[in-house]
Image (cartoon, rainbow, N blue to C red):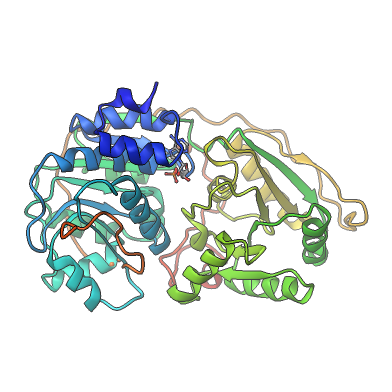
Length: 451
Ligand code: AMP
C-alpha cells in the first residue's frame, strides 16, 4: 500500500514524501481510512508505530475541507499526558500541515499562560494540549469548543496513570456531543476500556501488535551485575562500544541526577531529564541530546514518555522499572520505524522479581550476558519459567456517549509551524505502581515521591 492510495490531498502527500516515508505503517493503514470516513477509532498502538501521523494526517485532511476556526475556537483537540509529547505531536502537525493554511497551536503547563491566551485568540484548527492548562485556559474564556469536530486522546493509558481522568471528564463535558473521537493507547487495561465506553461510539478498532509486545527490531540483553558496579559498568559499556547517543533510564529523579554526575565525572557528557527540571532545562537537554552535543540522556519514565528521537540506537535500563509495561515503553524508544535498536538492562540480584514480571509481560526470557570484569558477587538467579499470558479479548465498548465531569492543564515554546492563515495488557504486575502527574505523584509506587 502507498500513501497515494489513501485519499490524502497533494499538500499532505508532499509533506509525507519530504519526510522520506515510503509506505504507511500498519497503524496508519488501518487508522487513516477510518478517520477520513469520520468514524470513531480505538487504537492499541505505542509510540514508535507511526501512530501520530496515523491520526494527524487524516484529521488535517478533513479539516482543510471545512471552514477555518473562528476566534478562540478549536476544531480538532488533541490531548496528551505530558508537555514533551504535546510539543512533539504539535511538531508533527506542523510538519504534515506545512503546505496547508491550517492554524495549529500547542498549550501546556509550566510556562506563562498569557502568551498562550494571545495565540488562541485567532482560533486553532488544531490545538494540542495537556489537560490541566487547557482547563485553566477554558476557565479564562481563552478557548471555545462550539466548533469542535474531533477529539483525540493520545496515550490514554498514561493519562489515566497520571491521574488525569477527572480533568478529561471535565473537558469532555464542555465539548459538543456530536464529534469524532479517537483514542490511542499503548495498552488496553480495564480502566482504559471503562473510559472508552463513555467516549467512543461504535469505534473502528485498530491494533498493530498485541499489547505489551516489544518491537521486533529491538535486540534485548540483560547484563547481570552488582548494584554498586552499575555506573562503572555503564561507562565501560559506553566507551567500549563507542555509543554516541544513549538514553538511560533510572527509577528516580535523584538516581538520574546522581548517575549524571558520575558519568560527567568520568568524562562522559550526560544530562538528566525528569519532573524536577524546569521545562526550559528539559527542552534544552533534549535538544542537546538530539544534536549530539550530549552523549547520554538520563531520564525517568515519566520524562521520557513519548520522546521521539529519530533512530535512537541505544537504550539502557540502569534500573528496571517497577511497572512492567514501562519496560515496553522504554525500549520502544529504540528500533523505531524499522530501524535496528539495542536495549540493555543492567540487572542486580534484588531486581530478579522485576525481571520476571517483565519477562511475563513480554512473554520471553531476555538473553543474559555477563560482562567480563563485572561478574556479579551476588549472582542473579535464573528467572522462573514463563507462564502463558491469560488471554483477555478486548470487549467491544458499549454505545454510551455520556461522560461525567470534573476538573484541571498545556504550552508552546514550540511555535506551530503550520503556515499561518495570515499565512492490552492481561497481566497485573505484583505491585502496580503508577506514574504521577509531573512533578507530583501518588499511589502504590514506592518510588513515587522520587520520580
Ligand atoms: P510515532 O509512533 O508517531 O511516535 O512515530 C514514530 C516515528 O516514526 C517518528 O519518528 C515518525 O517520523 C516515523 N514515521 C511515522 N510514519 C512513518 C512511515 N510511514 N514511514 C517511516 N517512518 C515513519
